[in-house]
Image 1 (tube, rainbow, N blue to C red):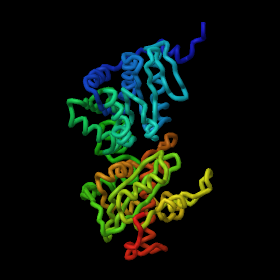
Image 2: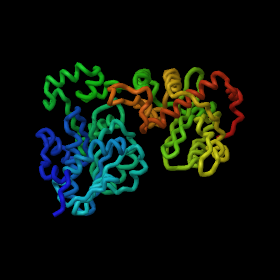
Image 3: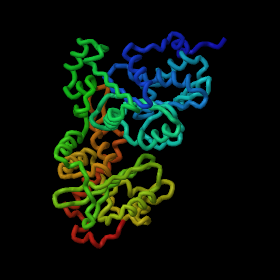
Image 4: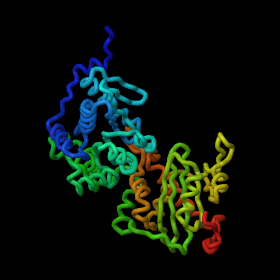
Length: 432
């Protein structure tokens, strides 16, 4: 007889039993095709979601393909993988696990896999029929709208979003959509002051040890609380109050400036701006991944703008190992005559952005993805010291934020006339 593993021993004693409030929530979520559940910390939302996936896998048969998606692959493993293995083994003793791919293959042929949202293009073509998004507030909304939703429409699939608010972002958009379409969506919110899961004594401790905004966000599910550690969150709140995020049309009489963050394996992000006296009009934003520089050259030409400068990061002048050619040389061959900015400290760039943002007007529709990223761009949290690190968190928001730092740097050099063409000569420039 084969020796039983620790996981198998644990699974024998594991009972997939939910708290009454969790079971009630699950029954409500089952009544709709799409669901969003916003919960306070320690509600047990991940346990509920994984339990739902495993149950649906047992019911779904051979063709069932489910997915749990967290903001990053590492986070998916840390948050959900152990729970998933215990639940799956308790429900199906013959389930098989792939530790490298974080995949569970049930004896029926059904399959569940864990993913990270930091590389959205890797989710394309998976033919999923049942998806859980966890910590949605830390993901780009387009993972849902552009990649997962089309799969679920084709497969008549289901989706569940779970998380805690972190300002008005992807989770807020899903929540608002759910409230507007109750015939398709189930929207549930569980605040710590209402559920009784955390005792009043412990809630009092949490309130005492947390800032007001942190407590309101983490325990009372407030979308209005400021995101702790966000570099530009309060500035964007002011921009919204002042009506500076709205329709900002392109002015054909003025040249366009672009600023790029060039990713190697990650996304490339590009901001498009026009100077209007002391104001800076941010008229467009482009981000993609998995495509070559020729794609971006074609996109720029297709927009029909007259360009003055393309600001590129310092590493655009570095030779690529495979070809020995720099990316600035490749772009110039494609007709994009960019300028390489000198290397600068990230902290200095963030301060430059803080000074620039109050002068900016953003096109709400064309710049939506970039605006979301700038709002959520934040410092990295050090769990060991329980304090913010002096560097930014590298996640999906980094590309847009880095590109905007280069916009601030490039505009600063123009303002100081540091070797760039004066504005009055911009009419002579080519389209790219």
